[in-house]
Length: 114
Image (cartoon, rainbow, N blue to C red; front, side, top):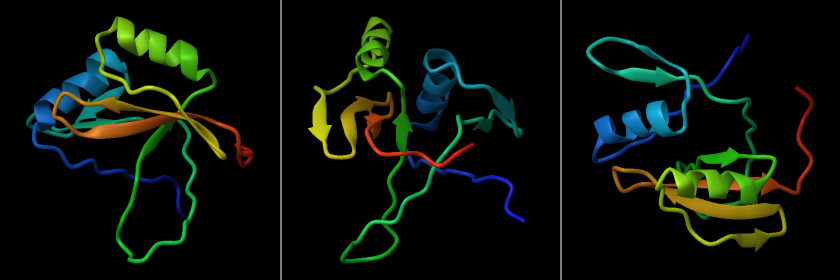
């Protein structure tokens, strides 16, 4: 039976983004060899949305208090966008050191039990 999920984020600067996940977000990790870090993530959800094509995927962090989370990230000098209200949550975007962007939101939708 399925016991987890593995997320891959593609980046132009994997070393910088790995350091960001390790040092700034303080996510636990294991070195799978040669500095290739694999990070533990908080509990996850999956949802399916209508699209004109397949094979497009998105990754978002979720939080309980978007204002407090963004304040903490800004104190750590993380570039974050303004907050954008959506029907499903209060959304912002953070920029990784490698230049990629990751969404972060405080959900308004129900979540499955853990």
